[in-house]
Image (cartoon, rainbow, N blue to C red; front, side, top):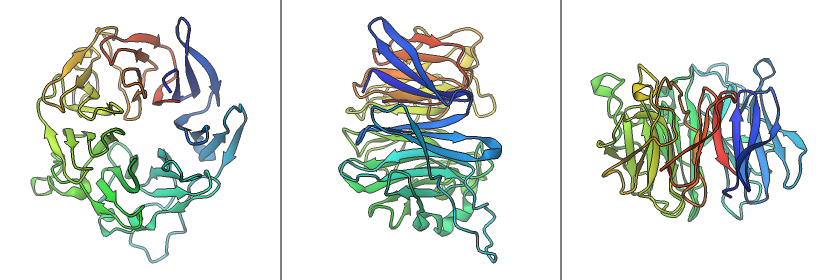
Length: 362
């Protein structure tokens, strides 16, 4: 849908609703509480919300279609860590970083990515969860480490719409991993990526890459885009290998990426100056867009702040609707902008919301 979006923020889940005269902030859920992620499930109309309540821990809630009543459901939890384990990771859910529905026909199936790097699956709409031990137990997991967090995070979960057994996940810092059998086994799949933050002999180590976000084109599922810590990469073979895009203007550093739902050649990014200085280049916000697979880019600034702007757009805080031309973007400073023409121009929705962690269309 292109007439409703959800903004997950530091102080609640805000609905953004299209009306006859524009876009307005609508109902607010969990006001005052940190909502880190939301997932509208189009298979049955449910809406899921992940909360991080600090001392009270991580929580998950579900609201049914055409209902305003939220129900707390199970939170993915790790098994007890063996006493003789040499694993330095804490086997405790610190944060929910990704939520994804199963394929149409897989009623009740959900996937969840967490910090410290565990992937979970539910078969009953979140009433219970099981850790994907097939990924948790890969030997390379001991090489994974936290990027901006203290522990590794699974932040991107992408199913191939043609075959739900084929899926990819992205981990900071653990690279891209693919499964072709519904998560029964996994192979690291970061070939072509480069980790300049590591010693030279580790630059091409696939298991320690830091993809900030990966997205897949639903209409051309073999085409995926990645905003990586060290630049922008693209795959045209389902994530088996990755090609670096070297011509991106403004900056190749950032967190967010969105891909057109039908045209895998079209993608949007929100560049920041650098790893060491995470602000818009020149304190002027820009969105970059390619329509030809990264051969060239447009720099889109119309309607975005161009002076004294220090907003950072997090990895889940840029989204494109099913129509392919409506985009929404939120920042850690509480700014929200919306475009209805593919990013050519932007309208300010608000500059005073709480910090925005994630956005999505309903």
